[in-house]
Each structure stands twice: as structure tokens, then as C-alpha cells.
Amino acid sequence: MHVNEGTDQMILSPQELESVMVEDTPAESVQEQPAKHARVSKKKHSSGLEEVGMIYGNVGTLKFNMVITAPLEKMEYVQVNHPIHGFVLGQVSEVERRTNLTIDGAQSIKHGTPVPIEEKEVAVVSIVGYRDDRNLLQVPRTPLKAGENVLRADEELIKDIVGIKEHTDVGAYIGLLTGHDIRVELDINALVQKHVCILSKTGGGKSYCSGALIEEMMKHKVTVCVLDPHGEYSTMKQKGVVKKTNRDFGVTPKGYEDRIMEFATDTNINKGAKPLRFTLHNLDAREILGLTNIKNVRSYLTMLRKAVEALRETKDSYSLKDIIAVLEANAEPSSAGLISELEYLNEIEVFAEQGTKIDELIQKGKTTIINLRGTPPDIQELIVNRVCNAMFELRKVGKIPPLMLVVEEAHNFCPQQGVVACSKVFRTIASEGRKFGLGLMIITQRPAKVDKNVLSQCNTQIILKVNNPNDLKAITSSIEGLTDGMEEEIQRLPIGTAIITGGGVSMPLFVEVRPRESKHGGESVEVVPSRRM
Image (cartoon, rainbow, N blue to C red; front, side, top):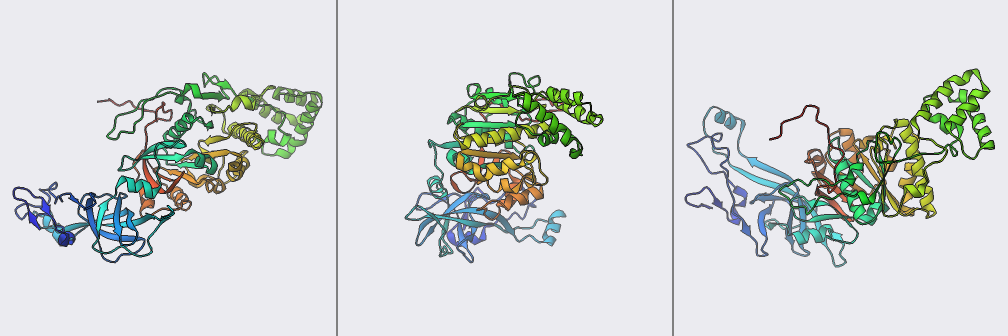
């Protein structure tokens, strides 16, 4: 090793890889020189790729240790030449800086006594594998050699081994591979056929990410239906603002008003939406009682059943007002509580003699937003149940086109604990929908509270930042192919970065989600306005 005169740059030979030192500064303490570290010059391999380290110690077939000689971060890709299979791709799962600084040395520094520190960076690399003659991803059965140079991975090799295809006819562009200018595109057919889940803590970017996916589906003229409890998706009609970053995602602002149809149960709150109405004809007495707050169902079941049967004998369609009129005419003393509950349902104006037809609701190549903002949760459950059952049955007989059903706040509609009105239909769609071209996109901030029978059927998973231990456990127990260190990374993901598995890629990827083209409607509200600089 020698030091260039006039600089603190060290040029290392391969024999000195294990002894990377910080330049001794006996006249100055470490605290006084916090920014003065050893800098290693970039060294090129015969392949033209940058050398970033060398394998040392015991070497296995699934992972190896390397000493780092150039800047390298956790989760970056590297490649190493295998004596049999050629270049093998690996991913850095852990980085550690080893030093000789002891507790006594730290105390000496604290009291102003300079202490020379010897340090070296080492990493653990998980082996991703190579492509064999049949283009199948394989992991070597014999270990790499100690002393072999580790290279920063070539982007073409990453795409080839990981299975990333850019600018495809069926690709939904979701973002760029972290640390690389590689477009990550998810296979839309795989998304619909094998279901999707987007999981994140509150404010982690799940609705933003789902909006980006829906934009891609609209570009490909995929039929989409969004169940939107909070009215976040109607803003997709409007052009968004693409903020400038140090990454060029190649995205320009665009609105999708020509592709979106919006229906709402409360058109007074949700201006511009078409009214969504349902008939009572297909609901039996028990189902109607299930929409009320009446606990003792048996007390009112017979009474309500008689009223409904009397109306069915005389009318093809009827309203809640008609049911209330029959109950009042019968003048049973115990009917007052039931009438009060039915009057509450009637005020919500969800039910009508003429309901919304399914061919109005679902049209080929269009995105339908069912805006439930302003609708009580119990009524939301009924609406979701009616819509999903209708779509499933009509899709089975081919009366509506293949489509993707997007469910926001899914933990409310298919909970792990307890049963709501729409629990059963989501289990059915999750297990059988793919056979009939009915895809499911589950979006939730509480993965642990979503029915595992539904969540386990989602083979494409997009995971953003999650901190809750129960949610983290639910996620990691259901993802195949997680490499060492990724479980920790889920908790440390920056906002806007996701781990994606499935959707046509063969292993989990770290992806920076692309900016939205349309306006995002799920932004947090400022309580105290801040001054913008």
C-alpha cells in the first residue's frame, strides 16, 4: 500500500484488501476530523466492471463474506465469476464496519487523547444465482472461491437473472429498481390472474402506489372497479404534479377523466358522481335486519318476513317506505323499534325501486370508482357485498368483461376476526375469481387484521414501510423468497420505496415507486399551516 503525496487517498493491492486502515492522525483526535476517512480509488476488472471487494473466509453455496474496497450499500447487486457457471449474481444482505476501537480507546478520545483507529468494511452477500441452458434460475451447488474479485453488477446481468423485462406489451410500469435505472414492470395478466396485495403502515404510500398501478391498467385499457371508502380516487380524473427529483422516472402529468366513471351513494357530498342505488327485491328479511342495529333479531324476524312476503305478492319492486307502511298498517305494539331502524336506512337513500344496472356500473376498458364517502360502515359492507356478488356471478357467465377489483381498507371488508356482510364473497373471489378473470387487489394498513384466506391468495405482493410487529409477522410469514436482511428492511424502507414480489419477477425487488401522473387524493391534511420556503 502507498499513499499519494498531497492527498489522503490510499491505493490498495489485492493482498492488502483485509487491512483497510483509516489514515493515522496522531496530531488530531478522531472527533476533530469526522469527515476525513480513507477513500479507495475505483478499480476496474478485466470485464470492464468496477471491483468492489474480494471474497474471504469460509464460503457457502447460499452466501459468502466479502471485504469491501469501494462504496457499497446494503441490498445492492454484485456479481462474481464462478469456475463452472460463469458470472453469478448476489445481493448484499448485510454491511458491517469492523474496528479495533475498544471501550478504553473511546474513553481516551472523549478526554482529548487521539487514538489511531484501524477499520475495514465487510459484507455478507446472499447468492441470487445464474441462468442455466434452459433459462431457469439456479443456485450453484459448489461454492465460489475465496480470493475471487467481487464486481458491481452489470445492469443487463441483473435484468437477465432477476427476470426484469422493460417496455413490454403487458407491463405495468411501477417504478425503478433501487440504485439502478432499470424499469420494473409487472405483468398485468399475472396481476389479474393471481391477485395483488399492497401493504403499508398509515402514510406509507399504499394508495399512491395503487394509483400508479391503476394508471398503468387504464393505459392498457384494463377494466377496473375501485371500492373507495374515503373518496380518494376520484382525483385521478385530474392532472397531477410530478415533482423534480434526482431520479428520472420518465413520467409526465396526465388526467384520466376520459377513462373514469364515478358512482356514489351520497351525491350531495360527492359532486359529479352518478347515484348508486340498489333494490330490496333480492334481500330477505334476515339480511335486512342485518343492516340495522337490532341485536335481538328473532324478536322482529317473523314480523318483517310477513311484511316482505306480502309486498312480493303484490309488487315486482318495493322500497323501504313500502315495508314501513305495511308494518304501520299491521300496528303490532313491538314494531316501533323495527320501524325506527328502517326509517334510518331509508334516510341514507341507498335503496330505491329502480337500482343501478351492472352494465352501467362495469364497462369494458373503463375504470369504475364506487365512492363510499359519507356512507355508514354497515351500509358500506352491504354495498360491497352486493356489488362483489353481482360481479362474480356475472363474470362466471361472461356477461361482464374480465376485470381487476381494487379494495381499499380491505381489513374492514374481509377481517381476520369476526364476520361482516361481505366476508364470504371475498373468500370466494380470492379462491375462485382467477378462474373466471376476476382479479383482486387488496390494499390495507393492517395486514394482521385481513382474512388470511384472502391474503394468502395474493401472489403479487407490494410491501411498503411497516412497523407494527403483528403486521410485520403477517407479511413475512406469507412472502416466499425473502433473502436475509429483507425482514429488517421492511421496517426501514424510505417512504416511496417498496419490496415487490411476484407479478412476473422471480425474486423480491426493491423498487422506488414512480410518481403519479394523476392527482393523488390521499394526502394528509395540515392542521397548522407551515410556511413554505
